Every structure is written in structure tokens, then in C-alpha cells.
Length: 254
Image 1 (cartoon, rainbow, N blue to C red):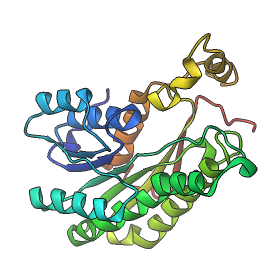
Image 2 (cartoon, rainbow, N blue to C red; image 1 turned 90 degrees about the vertical axis):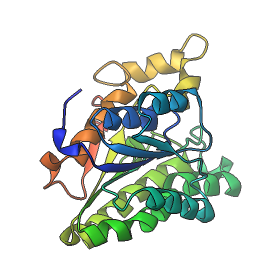
Image 3 (spheres, one colour; image 1 turned 45 degrees about the horizontal axis):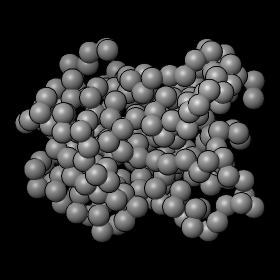
Image 4 (cartoon, helix red, strand yellow; image 1 turned 180 degrees about the vertical axis):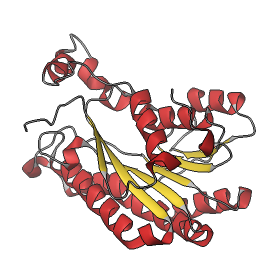
């Protein structure tokens, strides 16, 4: 892992930290010496281990990021422990099982959008005033290659990830001059618990995805976490409103 000494002492907030990319981000940023406030629906053994490894640097607060009341309570918890928020990692998200539009219920659509998109809007608005007051802050939103092209998800998932990219660009446009830097990451095939169904049985789906990826493999969540570190660090200071693809070349030529 690349070392970013400039991140030491900064305060980071991350969602979806119980597993996958969110957990990898928490581990990567804590290793840089930050104070990390993480949230997810429930605490698990991985998060308990993080608490034990970083007893004074890692805080966990359970939260349903779809609910504005929960987000307000999370923000209150964070700001009761710190006066600064330097980095926000909006990572929480769910899939829709590649469900096409005619098979997508209103409940599924709302759940995908509330989890993937509304959560980013709610938490960003809860913490952005603190960033603006200190005249600096970095926001990294988790999009997807499904936010750039079709075929990476179903109707709701693809639409939500396209919207995340649009929201990211508008945030950058509105607040870059005020010291806020906003970008998003568009992962391809990342081996996380969210994709575990692809590896069941003979893992034919996982093998097919790897075969259709020029790099011929799935990525580890730590690779996305490494990109997150770069985007959050001062070395990326002139990168605003960008979509950073990390997909092993999957979207090349599509």
C-alpha cells in the first residue's frame, strides 16, 4: 500500500464499512493514521477487530443511510467527537440482480435509489457545512461502470449509478472554488460479499466476467481502497469532478 503521510491526523467518514470496498477503505485509511468514523447497518466481527486494532482512531455508529433521521443522528455523533471532517467516503450501495425495467417493482426502485443515491445526498448535506466552514474537504462517491455504460446492472442500479456521477459533477461545479474537492470511482468486477452469488457452485458467472475483462481477473477491494487514498490525498488536489474507472479494461470498446 502506498503511504500518504499528509493524511495522518485527518478525520474520515465512511459508509458501508462492514464489508467489501467500505471495509477495505476503513482499513487503508486507518493505516495512514487518520481518525475514522464508519457506519453500516450493524457491527460485525471485522469492525470489532478494527476497534481492537485502532482503539482511539476508529469509531462505529450503526445507521440506515436511507433514512434522514439516522443520518442526522450519525452526523450528531461525529460532530460530538470532532470539530473537523476532512474526507467523506460515500461507499454504501446495493445491487438489483440485473433486473430489467418491466420486472423492477416500485419498492425495488426506491430501495436502490435510497441506498445508492439518496444516502450520498443526505450525508453530504449533513457534513458539507463543516467542510465549508474549514474551507477544505474531500468527497469520494462510489459510482460504477454501470454509471457509464449499460450491462453493469439492472434498470434501477444503472440509473442510480448514472445519477451518482451527475451529482458528483454538480457538487464539484458548485463547491470547488470553496475548497471542496469531489470525485467518484467507477469500479468494475470487484470480489466483494455483494457479488458472492457469482462465485457459488461452479462459479461460471465469475469465470465469465473475468473472461470478458481484458485484465482476465476480478479486483480485490483493497485495490479500490488504494485508489480512494490517492483521490483523497493532496497529490490529487487538481482532480475535480472526475470519474475514475477501475475495471480491468472491462468498459474498453463498449
